[in-house]
Length: 128
Image (cartoon, rainbow, N blue to C red; front, side, top):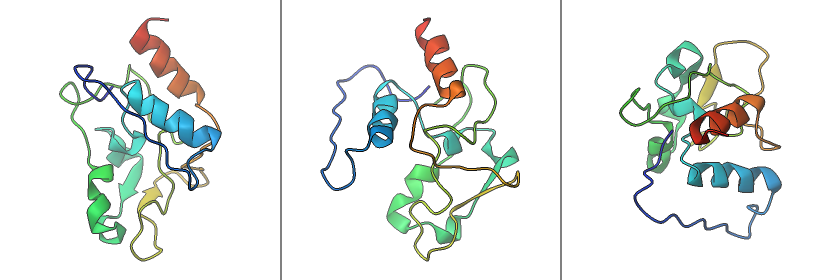
């Protein structure tokens, strides 16, 4: 789990494209304290981050976090279907993939709803 609970959080949604249910859920999940799925410490077993294709001002969105320091994932496996996962071309500078899944034929970057693993992580973290 991510962001500090020691300060007030503000959620700012811009009108251009941000009023989609999945985007709102994604941003609210950040407010609950969760990082992006592709930032998990174990991500290299599941995806390849193609740094050369990432827009320079967006590299922070692909930083890998450390277990027990920045983040904890409530004893769950990597979730390609997480609402918190970016899609293959997020923040691409050249139209080429910034994230390549190691497993074939998986969809990443869905913005429809929380995955079952997302829900499990929230429930475990908040004890409900």
